[in-house]
Length: 213
Image (cartoon, rainbow, N blue to C red; front, side, top):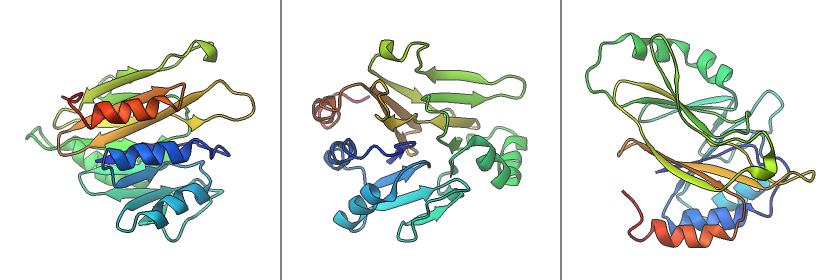
């Protein structure tokens, strides 16, 4: 299981509850998809020896040499690509992505591109002629945004774009705490939007119980 988070900016106080949630759910791999301050994530890594942190950044940084892997774009096992922006991911791994798309269907695991930057959580499946948005959670008026949780099944031989959304509360913004859990083995991505960090404890109880497919 790989947790995805992006665009925390200067928001730090909400990260310890999220890290506690990941610990309760036994999630040991975390991908930070850019526009995040290193310190809270560095502390998470130091407190959990053996856990894995994948750290991507844009042209302005910041870098994190002590992360499991760090760079503007990363490739993980299970055909997972990480970057801060979609453009960076596609340009950095263009040949591999195009080679995957050009092969005939054979039941291969999906190829998943994960990025931040847009602040809007979404899952998109790329098609030969048209792209299909499978999940999106946004609102023209931010104060109308509602908590949401949804599991999206990833089908074989397909390319997906997964954006966890922003996890931040700064400059008087309305609360919107978004993150995702990617399960390559079961080929699922679980999208979360919270407006109250207190919901994480209840959510962890459900996820470690019977409230899973």
